[in-house]
Length: 509
Image (cartoon, rainbow, N blue to C red; front, side):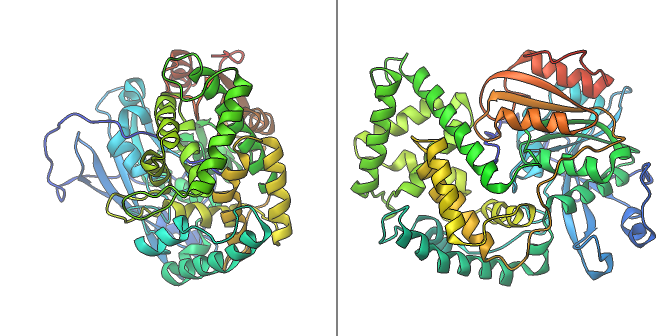
């Protein structure tokens, strides 16, 4: 489920340097909410938060202690890193939790580096904007699997077998087994508790410790999966909730991946259509001509073995990753054209820059933990085939749904995740289900008509599942809608979050 939100880091202005250790405030007494809290969790809900200045721009940070296993709260705990931009307005409504998606995205960095994207001036005036690194991520207790060089081998080593062949699939089994074993060895019991419901319970704990009786939430991409499960578990604690670019909780993983790859194919066709209108497009002719040229270039790259200075060679798996990254946002389409133009000249540098960006590879060869959390969370949150035959069957359906790019996209995503989950040390804890969240306040579901990563059909489905769900549509390209430059979307979301106003009908932005 390639649902990571490709958010570019927004440059922030220079702000007054703050002393990191300066204590500036304590949290208000925790608000219990309407849903009851078991006595076994009282020590967590009764903790006091101490905030200190951090980053720049007047942000404050704290840590929240939460159980590793919510079903057995005495079995150990972990720390969640939380960051806040507090409003000074007399019209303050409360806290607004924000999550950028993933699974594996850093909500801490989302607020620290992209505050204007996470919440516009209207929301920042009336809410404390609160981000956090979910369990397993970043500054919270992280999931650890392979170190840099080993991760390079795992992600980028070129197979001696043709990609997509039965021999290649079989060769991935010991590789994925070793990866799963490394995750288990280096991460401990936390690896079995980074599922969406555990994260949703963390969200309710934060709600209470922030002093809010109800949760106000703006979740993007996989963050919508957290939000939907929060609404299922704590419907009466739902305040104003926006789920933008939602994951459909009611469909199986094979269907989800296939639908998503169809979404990327649609986005790729839209990219080519736009590209052909310009003077510097690396493709030419009609859309069908351009699709044929793209297929030919992809096949050529798969046999040429283009190598960059650090010795890595571009294979089809990495090329699929590279193509997918700029398809998340229309603003990145010119860069995708540049990459294709370079590939036509035998230069793979731009392709590796995109692949590295998606894979969380830093310039020094180290990695963020996002890939690890991505796989680990999906293994817990979904149900995958239990054999290579099942992996192959979904590869075939993906190739049919996305005939230009689906096959190579599946090599680095569906194949990797499905085989890893077949060998994962922990069984899945969630199964496909329709979430009604009976008793919840109105929940806004925002969908973009040509969203490649979370197709519009998922937004339509989730809005219809939720008893109180209502759909807001953005017509256009790109993954997620809020903050994308659509004034109608931004105004509709802001008015709902600030005033609680539910549109009389879908505004069709």
